[in-house]
Image (tube, rainbow, N blue to C red; front, side, top):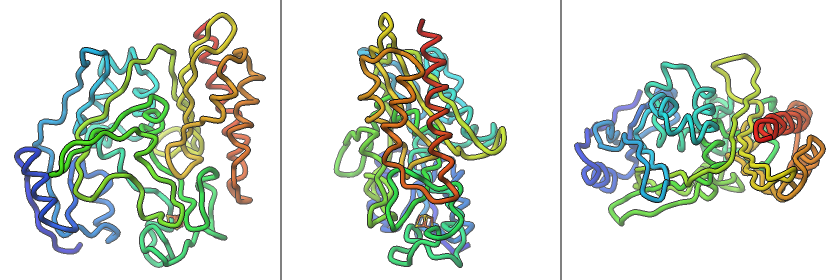
Length: 327
Ligand code: SF4
């Protein structure tokens, strides 16, 4: 462990000022990812700004029925909230599938948005990793890639995004509110996470001095569900996950939201599939055609090619279940 300064911020302005005046500073919320990475000598903050005392834990409905979730709300608190469970079951289910109860009790919504990849080479300091050390190369290219991404990859990085919660947020058109000493800005979730391209070390649209303060969810008038496929029943990251919302009008699809996890370098909104589905009959054939359209762009390795078929089957199963519920 390297030495670092510690600041406990009493309020948001103090937290923002502490980070603005200290290049290399990091915010500490639940610490479920940052502390691990510091122990592994992968994250090396010069200053840790403790934000756990900030008043950002509320979950409230706004007058226009938007649901506003404070960035420091704990995952367990959000998953158990009646408004989440009744109006956005896809999000509650994603959180419950995401980690152990102990982790959910500590981890925050804001922290989940910036959690880092679980690529095994990223954690192995003896391996080349462009994300950890820009320009070093990528040991996953030609390496062990069973858990790696098939969508949104580049020659510089093919690490899968690890989050379940963010996949649900992508399907729900969430907005991320961030604040710095320059003011407040709002980022659509689809623009928040970045593809690796030639700079895999830049993972989000967040500037180093910006603090996530809230996540907002627009109203949802469709049934929703999250399905996760993994190697064992718990404490495992997704091989494939699907966050979906579906409304069937008559026998046609009137509204559909689809996002994928475990298969992409960022929470993946399946826009191609949605284009195929909107207005189509709510049948397994339509769901399969939509999955094929989305997965046509998959770039696989011999070890992770199975994810194409697994994703197709999971998309069809999840949408078929939602169609049954909507009938
Ligand atoms: Fe690093 Fe990405 Fe390559 Fe993994 S896939 S070793 S995170 S550059």
